Length: 130
Image (cartoon, rainbow, N blue to C red; front, side, top):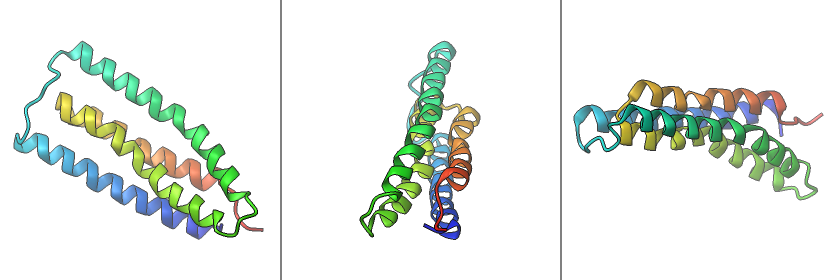
């Protein structure tokens, strides 16, 4: 895996994350679905659960992608790069239920912004060809 490939696949995940989060925000702003969780205490509980889960997943996924990339199989590097796309994108998947259930778009956008932390972690910690 080369550094440009890691950056490119991470950027694909980031763009997907932005588009998916923007769509969820559009759904709430347009009022296409009702807001179900109206209690602030429950909403922030959901936020903390999703945020902790999303952050805790970062080192586990980096470790897994490093193991995949170290495989002797020549196709493993492509699998690791494809996993990087999903890994970077997946923060918005955690943000989507929060946005759609609570209607709190700013905190939901903060959850989706963890895609940037995932992108940086991938660029810094994934191995490159020497």
